[in-house]
Length: 374
Image (cartoon, rainbow, N blue to C red; front, side, top):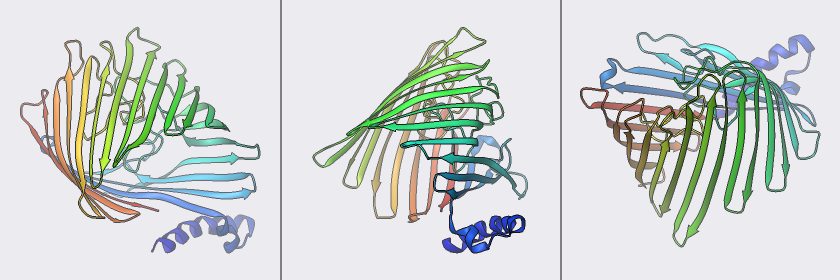
């Protein structure tokens, strides 16, 4: 089934190419790689008034043009956002729109270096580049990456982006669509990873972030930890925006646990264009620290891999908002059962409760998510 789906997608594009170039179909298909995701999500929030069905299909095509040039495209089927990244149907079984979200060329003719030119994913620590069921940020410009030993250095310039059209953009951030500059470095030293990056969005904001991650074994216990600090300055505001977070996860046999904590500045907690960006703090379901000022967040959970295919988990989230905060306290508890039918087909069911001061009562909520990767 996977092979048939792959050939069908490539064949449709290849046929169009043969009309213009008279290239044999078999030759056009030979150097094309296909990857992507197809996801369905059902949400049922008690206080929302009605349930929602969400669909998204994303297909990435990678075609080798020469030994050192690759052509890349990405197609997304969905609706409900400006760049068709999230399909939502609540009142009728509506059809989804198809849009071309990425079109670019990558050159690898320089040793240990890649240069991508064109419309591409805005792959930064401050934005959400790709998501199986959510918005994706893109930009048109140039990205260059070079590796020197354990470090990869990158720099990018985009003259147009989707930053001001994202439905998932942080509500407290007014962004611009033009002139975005990004520079950064990622490095690995054994079990330790470090990164630092800076972004400047003309007439909107500039920000920097530094992160540290580590993984190590203590006997039969596997541990991983992280720490990150981010600061963002808005062009039209004197408010300080910052967020720091730390966390640790442990696995022993079939059991796992995680604990993380973070805080934002009293004046602001806007540290990226998307709530779930690397710089944000959005680890569980509906409780997120991103965009909340003068607050702290705690995420905790335990899980068990009861069979090769089934995992059960219990998660807890809590936000404690201070007197200067732009939000209120909120607590979330939910259980989740994950079923991995195959390596590329997984699903989960969630059921829990959200207790937020903004609501007069606790809210019961449920979610079903099915995802196929190819």
